[in-house]
Image 1 (cartoon, rainbow, N blue to C red):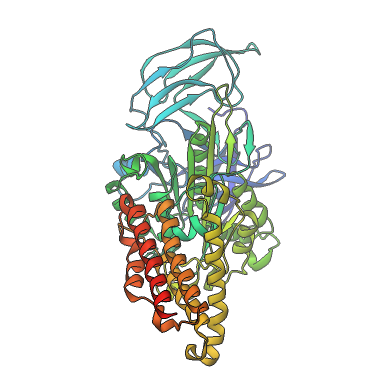
Image 2 (cartoon, rainbow, N blue to C red):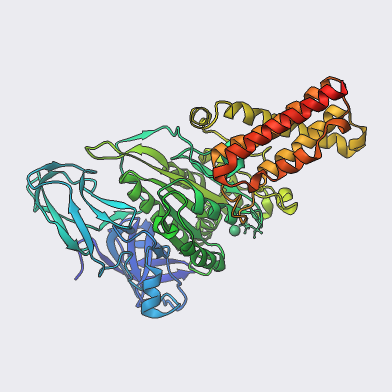
Length: 592
Ligand SMILES: Nc1ncnc2c1ncn2[C@@H]1O[C@H](COP(=O)(O)OP(=O)(O)O)[C@@H](O)[C@H]1O
Ligand SMILES: [Mg+2]
């Protein structure tokens, strides 16, 4: 059967992932089409009269001119409902374990594998009664999706009316759990546990709020110096081997959110395999449940079709917004957005479009801005006031680590935080290789840290940053004249700069004691180093030589702060701060 807006055409040209089809007059841009005998999934990206140009999301090898193409009359959709959590999907939202079960390791062309399992039955608990009036975003009922997470089944956008029927019991995602009679007199709308959503369209909310609370990452260089807000955006640009993937994965494991959507976009498949092997063994540091229970993985690795990278980004985003609408904090992590950019470039090249900078399409900037704009902290639709957020953190892989290239530049214009990974730091094994001189955050969340963590949070961070800047200036002089020629005060600066870099900024993602550093511990660690700094400066001010005051035992203790366990951190570091203060004071008094 052919639906009203389905069109059937014939393939007349095939250029890599791009194909041209004749006889598609009346189809719509953005609609999905099935191409060729194997019914490859494609999207219409250009229409000229009768001719449609399509980007094909699957491998086009073997496709022949003359084969049919059918537009489905519907845009690319995501399936949303219980069962997404702990799921692993390809860029088109097809469940990878399910594909593997049906077909082994290779995705058969045109495979219609759904996102959500059709045979799982979920216990649905209604939250409304028959006869109640409901509007988009209202909670119709709930499903315990995991032991910890209650999935809210919401009235979908665009549906408003009276609940004519609501059922309690156990249902598959396709079964009707409620019917809503709308005012327009049409048949009642059947509500299922599953709904579909056009991925390129942002899901509506009541209001966007300005991001004001930080998203705790447990990474010192981020939380203390370049924080990101819940509902904010960040880019992680960095050359090969600077730590983008380690950083994205560290955030996936330890960021303070309820849901993580991790999109592996065009990167090596073995990195995704590592995630698949490691994540199921880990525990969610906040809820204490298996980490996978809060995670959704979307894998469109480098060996998978290029055009589907774009689909993977938008599918991930739609899933993130879906959980946001239930009132959760969600993080969307994309590694690497550059591979998506390259896919855009490849498709644009095949279309013989007028190229923009470095061959990227002229709309690269607006496409990226549109992506990052879907982040945000929002008041969700629905009667009962709820807030949710989607935070987007995208890795960018500039060739040769050159940040002036178009992907990095367009991304930094669209995002609020810029964590610049530095090749030099990575070479010296300073990780995270976020460079403090080139990174920035536009989020004003210092006040939150001052009220919730430490009143001197911002003052400490500012002082530490100024010392790091001072150290950077001194390095230039040292290169010319050597450090021996410097006066004691400047030697002391260099010493403190090194403490800040080695004992505070550097943080191993692989050391279980240090991989996560909660904010109070961050504040105490910085306090210890700054106490040492003030002690040195006091002593030098009284004319005591640096060699007399620089205290080796204290330096050793400062270096070991990272190992202190979370529950002992405040007590032990507070004691160290005291010892540090007393030791330097004693030396100062003794010498003067
Ligand atoms: N925070 C970190 N702690 C320890 N080692 C790190 C850290 N970040 C990166 N590395 C090291 O750098 C290597 C390359 O990192 P990776 O994230 O794969 O780089 P990229 O994705 O930027 O190419 C890792 O295998 C690891 O050895
Ligand atoms: Mg990587």
